[in-house]
Length: 473
Image (cartoon, rainbow, N blue to C red; front, side):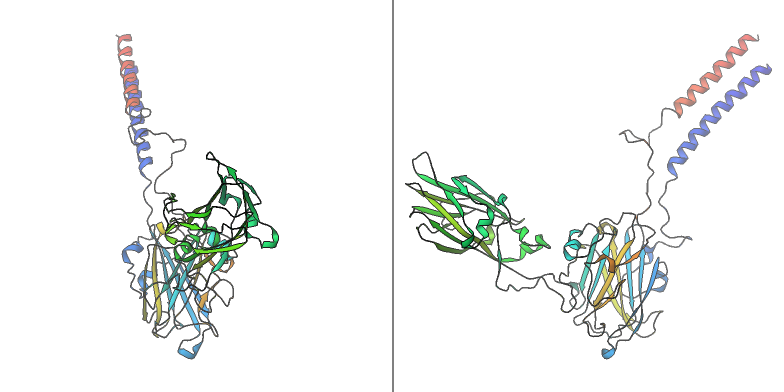
């Protein structure tokens, strides 16, 4: 009987240990809760922040950074030299920026603007082209027209003349009928530098024909913000200098519609070109409505005659007219581009704990969903500047940058101030189970360890008891 008791005790321990082991496994899988967004049981920033343009001390006390910077400004308008402050705060969903511009003591919104440039993944760049390459991929920006209470307008309604553009590569044309000599550069060269030549071939009706299809990506004519500039094209003219070795019956250009089709019987789409044996220019406007939404223009040049012929294209280029970007005067900010689609901004004129004289202040909330690459484990780069009427002496703006500057250096990453944000990247909100990359339901009851294992061990214990009882009868 003593041994039976021992067997019962061991069975109990096996069952209880298994149950406790399973319970511990369940607890481990459920302890990954969303971390508190602030320490010491403080309320979440998002619950107490009100973006109204007036810096609330109790709210901004939760900011991770309160960055003090000194500005020397033109005091002629009532602004004063001294310290100003930038706050950086965040929660899991938003980035908050506060500006306490103690030096800006004139409440005049005429011509006022504010710019914020962010480098979310410590990208390195030192030119406008490099900066633009990182747009929406590490570089984010907000350029706000305070005077008009809207984003600063990127373009102005002004087209000055036009810019000559050329073919970009041999991929932009295809000789369908005929044999050619030369390449795309011969379209672009001066008459003395040669020409692009095409010789006719005989078709099934015993006529001699040539046919060239063209497809040009207009975006390649713009080094920066091509998808924006193509929407601002106001004028596109063709200029073609050609000559045939004999007078021919037909020499036409057919403009394709924006749906990639053409109709040689549509007089609005077909332009007659020089069909004589002397050199002559053809200049005409291309209908902008025929360009596709993504900036592709298509057209064909075709010729026909009863006898063999050859055509030389000595010059073939384009005159492009478009609205210019709205460069902010005397700042060096040529492209006042706003990448953010969703944000909240407000400004006020009041005193603060830093300065009891009324002055300009800003509050900005940006959802992190707007900030590409914010989830990278890098510092956050920030560059701020503006005008209103506060400006540096002999300048038309103010800027807070890591290096001294007399222009807005948004295109140079070395001028940004960098901050180690606590929630960049945010801690994972759900655990990753090593090696568990299958499609099963990890929340379901596991087979082993779990209920099935409990039943197996319990059965072993009970069977052991019966065997011992039988043996000691």
